[in-house]
Each structure stands twice: as structure tokens, then as C-alpha cells.
Image (cartoon, rainbow, N blue to C red; front, side, top):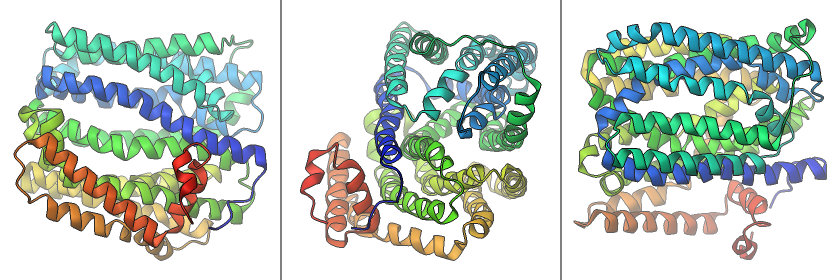
Length: 493
């Protein structure tokens, strides 16, 4: 087994512990929300979820505007001053109230655009979550900067438990889409209260011009690129909601959410740890490159089989957890897993540019990629709904190729080398994919049993392949998690 990346002992332990708690923060709350979602999916209709998806883009854009890249700028600072905190807090708070005011005024036009009268009241109600998000920006940045994900994990678990429970009760009492809206509001509110309880911070100053210039200088490009990215991530929902129906949008939205639970949640957990950790050693390019390759291989080792497996078991999985009313989401999920399989590569390439303070390049890349997305949408729409989904998948691979451009130059790590390293990780998944695919043709009428059989086969084959081939990523992950999982200590490397 290769030696771990050289670093100080304290930083290494914080990073390794941070991975565990960051995953718990993401997945602890997700597990509870997923459990509640099993009830909600059966109690609510695809149309209810489609209504929420129609306005999701407006909240996502507003949150980018509110945050303005300031928290990312804070996290990368070695020392955060009171002036920096106060400036970030007040800028975010002012932006939050401004965004809520704009949303309140524009809510009727949103309703008219989608031809859904209920969206006016729904938008104004859900918009309150933006205020709750803004008032905890300092607490969130503080814990991430300190690589303290344990506290965030507990907060998210409590918030998810209470908000999900209330949502299920409301759904049982026929509140429909308002159960989902209340879940979102309660989660933001409870998390805000808990963040202020565990880290009661009061701003000592107002907006400091020097701090503002420093933080906004870094964050402005991130904000613009973030706005572009969010717009084009959600543009498919806008198009589907406008040209097709809220029911079809509900199918698409839930297929996307299921794909994201496997891909984005895990990858974001890893990124939240390594971004602040690697930012502390950004001056050493060789060390940064070594860390990048190690992280890329480790995440690919987990993500590739997980997404491939999700696509293979999509039918028994959706029929088991959601019921036959969601059967329309199955083919959509089977297509979207192809784009989800490379999400971590997008994120890692962009994080390297953030760490090296090249946010100008991030903005340039986003513009190039969005031109490609527009072309993909125009072409895809010529072939109907599924043409649009296939175009989305293809454009994600084109975007990845563009993303790799500057990383290849800055780290002297060519796109071909990245492809070879990732394919070596994917190759470990091939026996599992073949076995699960062949096994899926066996007739098992009881869908929960079929799901259990296919997942068991996939896990056993992938585990056996890893033990035989012992890829480097497997060794690295065993090294990371063996102190916390005693069973891994018995694995011979």
C-alpha cells in the first residue's frame, strides 16, 4: 500500500475525521429525509413534486446571490478577522431581504409563466427559507474552516428529523404540495436556530470596505459562474415544466434527486473536507497534484459502481420505494446515471481552480460550457422529451472535457492521463455490471425481493473483485476508514 499524502499529523487526522462526519452530515439527514420520502412519494403525486421543481430554480439562484461567494472566500482565508465576518454577515443579510422582496413581487409572473395559479402563494411561503439560510452564513463558514463537521452533522440530523416528521403528518392530512414546502421551511428554520445556539456569534462591526473588496474580489467570479451553473442546471426543469406537464416534471425531478443522492451528496461531502484542507497547502503544486489524483481515484472507485448499480436496479428500486405511480421515472433515471457518474470529476476540477485562486478561469469555463448546453438543448428538443434528456447527458461529457483544460495545464496532468486513471477505476466495476445485468433478466415478480437479490449480487461481486485486484483507490479507502470500521482492519493489502 502506498504511503498517505505527506502532511502534518493534526491536519491529516482532521481531514480523515472530517470525511466521516461530512458524510454523516450529508447522509445522516438524507437517510431520515429518504425514509420520510418513502411515505411522501406514496402519499403525494408526481404533480405535487413537479410544482416544487418549477420554482426550485428561483431559490437556487437567490441563494447564490445571497452567498455571493463570500463564504468560499472566508473558508480559504488562513485567519478570519471580525471585519471579514461582520462584512460577510451584513452583505448576505441585505441580499437575502432584497431577493425575498424580488421573489414576492415576481411570484404572480412565475405563476403565469408556468400556468399554475398555486405557485404565487407557494413561492412567497418557501422564500422565507432564504432569510434563515442567510443568517447562519458565518456559523457554517466557521465550522467548515475549522474542519468541524461533527457539529453540522448533529444539527442536520435534528433538523431533518423534525421537518421530515412534520411533512409526513401534513401529507397524511391531505395538505399536498404544502407538506413539501413546509418541510423545506422547517429544515432551514430549525437548522438556523441550532447553529446560533451552538455558535452564538454577534457582529461587532458593519460592512468594512477593505474586507468587502478582498472577499468580493475572490467571490464575485464564483457568484457569476454559480449563477450561470445554477441557471443551466435547472434550465431543463424550466423547459419541461413549460413545454410538457408538471407530472412529467415530477418524474424528471425525482429521477434527478435519486441520482443526486448517490452522486452529488457523497462527492459534496468529500469536497467540503478536502477544499478547506488542501487550501492550507495550496502553495505546493506537486503535493496538490498528488492529492487531487488520490481523491479522484478514491471517489471514482465509489461513484462508478454506485451509479451503474442504480441504473441497473432502477425498475425494482422505484417500484419498491415509490410505487407504480412513479413508473414514468424509471427510464429517465436510467439515462441520468450516465451524467451522475462523472459529477465528481466536474467538481474536483473546479475545486482545483478555486484553491489556486483562478476564479477567472472558472467563469471562462462556465461560459464555454453553457454555450454547449444551449446547443444541446436546441438539438435535443427536436427529438422530444427523451431527446432532451439524452442531450443533457451528452453535454455533461462535453463539459467535463472543457473542465479538464486548465487543470491539465496548472497541474501538468493531461486529459488523457485523467481518462486513463478514471478508466482503471471503472474497469473494476465491469464484472459487477455484467453480473447484475444478466441477473436482472431472471423473473422475480416480487420487486422488493428482486431489488435485494440484485443489490446483493452487485455488492458481493464488486467486493470480491476489489479484494482480488486490490486497486490503489481500494487500499487508500481501507487506510482512511479502517480506524473507524474494525472489519476493514482484517483486510490484507
